[in-house]
Length: 265
Image (cartoon, rainbow, N blue to C red; front, side, top):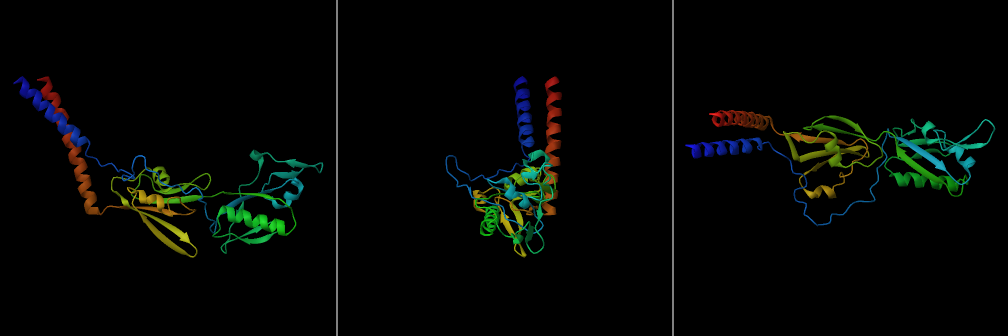
């Protein structure tokens, strides 16, 4: 009798463990092989879009020459005594930046309107450098550019829907999903869409986050204003999943109770 009791208890514990493990876990990049090398796009750059706000700073060996090109809080300013002084980065007023208008232009000091929509960060900085050199404003200018409002949106079957802002301009699709609380139980990891503005159109790219094909997607690194949408399962499937979860939870509870009763008899 004692052996039968022990076998029954072991069986109940096994069922309890199996039922508690029944909840589904998504395996990302499950076809990724140990030791295999996957290329990284180290030359990735964000592309400028309409309504972006850009922080652009110009500097050179002669600080006074750069002052007119830093009206939104450049590195240099003229003191009360008329001398050139270096501004502390913590006190700079650079929150507004240059807004890219509906035509894709920014209004840059002295240089006037510059069309920057569709250009990468390096292309914009090179454009400004070229204009400064050709206008004979300075010989060897240094131009830096940062996004002030880089954001993306995550919708659908994730832990937390909403818009997210990041420092800098480099965020991967996997990071975006993680920031949104991961894919929900009713989400489809093989139906993750990225809706992107390309010129005057919107284009949708579909991804399977379980496959390493993701590395080759143009959306592995998100662009400004991208919309990530995780497709949910059909309602009928949702109900089945919910019933399965409730059933396994009840089974676990009943098994635990029976185990305790049987063990204490």
